[in-house]
Amino acid sequence: MDNKRYKEYDVIGEDKLWEKFIKTKEQDIRDYFVIKYAPLVKYVAGKISMGMPQSIEFDDLVSYGVFGLIDAISKFDPARGIKFKTYAMTRIRGAIFDELRSIDWIPRSIRQKAKQIEQVIADLENKLGRTVEDDEIAKEMGITNDEFQTMLSKLSGTSMLSLNDIWYLGDDSDELSILETLEAPENMNPDVLIEKQEIRDHIIEAIKKLPDKEKKVVVLYYYEDLTLKEIGEVLDVTESRVSQLHTKAIMRLRGRLGRIKANIVG
Image (cartoon, rainbow, N blue to C red; front, side):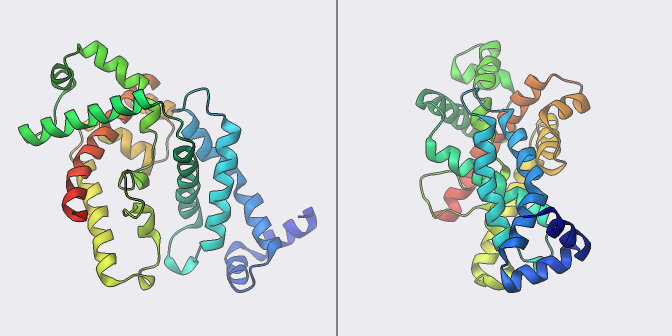
């Protein structure tokens, strides 16, 4: 797109451009939105890359995210009352993790260890009826607390999944995703809409029950959109500690939501 056309679109205003794009699907308007929101792709990819091993290249995450941005532009409907930036970030993040899942970048041994911890946390909390502490988890696993913390650090990359993906994880490709709750209600069967809202409510309730620091990390990372480094400054802890807290939070949520999902899907 030439610079003159880009400036013309700036003058027209984004609301009117969306109206025109929805009616015409003009390539130039789509290109304008891609250029305008390209920094958003880099921002999301940057956040995700901080929890990834060095083998995952930042540029690759960006390229995956661009597909999410294009998808967001194609499907966005201002009438839903959702800001495009919010909608696009969800799609960009989803596209990146979809690709990461497809290339299966997590070693099998790490994946198995993560599932083991999730199961231990879920079983203990179900048995005791309360949130369990690190030393209780470590004791159940037959390791020291220090060994457990080291393990959490190694597993941090496996937990860098958005909350929109938590419900999606599993063996069935047709399981419900929180991402789908952004779809326009008029396009849904009323029974499906109720089920999706029920799932959203379960996730919110599960987050509320997290230990205080873990809850703060989740809120600051997913809802306030802070980086791990920024969260560390807010909580006055190291970035690696924030990563550990995030990992535990996601494992607790997976365990708790897994039981609820079994009841709903089953």
